[in-house]
Length: 296
Image 1: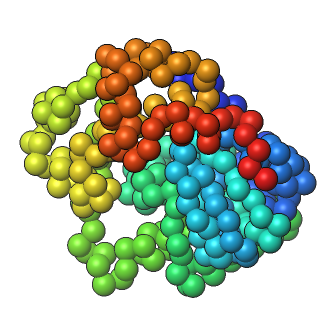
Image 2: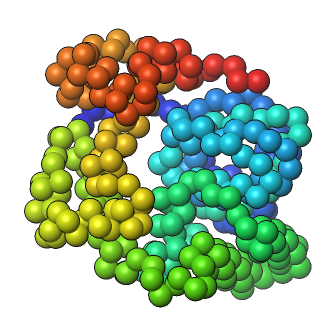
């Protein structure tokens, strides 16, 4: 697989010494500057940002998501983002080192964490907004009150876990919890997504993935529709489209060269694929999403 064009990775940096901390959007502006935030970047950490005032746009993997009070953006390592900040846009974020969640807890939290991974943008209910801000307040208070204590990090981790459970309940709806996806479906879809990452350039068919996973094609399709809200084929196409967008936005390669690197055969096949999924043409996308483009 050809290496994707380099997108700057932003490492996790803690001002408190903890592997989880609360950062406001104003603090990000002061620390990084609006010019840095406006460029395409790749966080090396988890960021859960809830917007609390104003109107704007947050770009995730080259998709524009309108944001307003109550919008939650979930950035996980591997995604790219770009801020479209307006003067009145405000927000509060939990910034978390990628290894903060204990491996022993991952299996129990997998279905909740995968929800954040599959849905990078959500509009929270009023209750869920209160839960998020209360969790942020508790983490700030605990960090100040118990600074230096050996049990501070476990306490902060439990605060995060409790919020994740609250989010799971809010997203699912108390009356529909029993009808949610099964653990088997969640685990299978996680494995499917991992295989897509490894083989999307190989142009595997659904049958190829099914054979590798040991499930029937219809079983995979049902899980995709139930959890992801789109078909298995749509998930595969979406990953390939993301790779095309990355090359267009972040490299100077010609369309013909990108088509060769990504195994389209020729430029016309790439253009046809891009037009079908994106609705536009590669050249127009490239002119809009160039690295270093000023977005104000």
